[in-house]
Length: 98
Image (cartoon, rainbow, N blue to C red):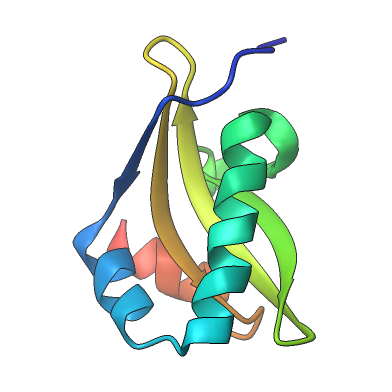
C-alpha cells in the first residue's frame, strides 16, 4: 500500500482543454478533488479489462456526480489526469481516446 503523496500532477491535452471551459465554481470543485487525490492517490477505484490503466474518483461538481479518470505511478509519485465528466458515456469515451 502506498502512503506517500503525489508530488507531480500531469494533464493530458484533452483534459487541459476541457478544464479551460469550466466556470470558476466548477474549477474550484475540480481543484479540491485533485488535492484530495494528491494526498491519497489510491482513493479512486481501479478499473479492470481494457481500462486496467485507469482509476476513477467520484466527486460532486455543482451538486452533480462527476467522474475523474486518472492514472497513478507510485514509483515516481506522479498523478496523471486523463478525463472528467458525468457518468453518461464516460467509459466509452475513455476507451476511444486511450
